[in-house]
Length: 283
Image 1 (tube, rainbow, N blue to C red):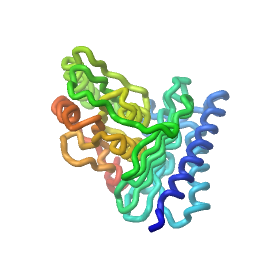
Image 2 (cartoon, rainbow, N blue to C red; image 1 turned 45 degrees about the horizontal axis):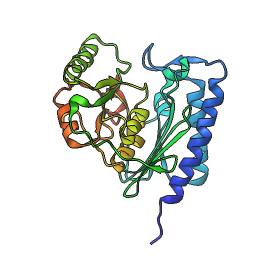
Image 3 (cartoon, helix red, strand yellow; image 1 turned 30 degrees about the horizontal axis):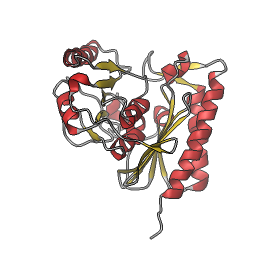
Image 4 (cartoon, rainbow, N blue to C red; image 1 turned 180 degrees about the horizontal axis):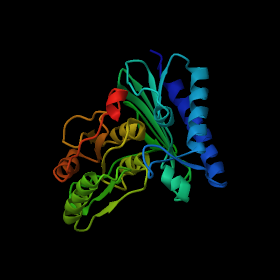
């Protein structure tokens, strides 16, 4: 039986590399900064131009597919996941890094069929690392197979996380409470963050970090990374230990259930609006 999605994934890799080249070129020029939901939630013309390039390229080849993109949602389009083949795209994951020239910026392209991840592509364009994961076919970086770490002792683990853009004092307190608890169990391990969810998840898949967690990210941040982690032998779940829900804006990605379960116990959960919440409920 013919593979219906291999050509789609091949196209995603080509598009991700071209999009990464656009980001690299933009890094050499002046960055025009705007704001989205808050003064710390940045967007640049590059984000918008790269997303438009990706969408146009995909629509020309796969006109019946659906799309969810960070910048289009920010502009007011809906963020609803259906059973239709759907591309979930973050054109520049790590916009703040991009603005400051901090060298972790990724193009993230996830592809979901019947609400289940089929493949993911994360191109860390400054590093020139192309991470891919395909359901049932493994995960790779620049063509070489990925395998998560075999570490089972969280005390010796590297845990990655981000602090997000919500500066509500109660949310910030929850974030730092979680970090304090994790730091107290990392005797020889460390807490790290690359500034991009997609890269953090790629690091877990690569075996150089044991876990990544965050509350407040969006589906476009993690759609690609989630399947790359699982195809590298890892696990993804909700921050309460339940099943992973792509639209929940909550995730724990880890090398194994032992590390994930220990991490879940340390996380102070705070409420966030789902990505697929009705628009009127997001304000």
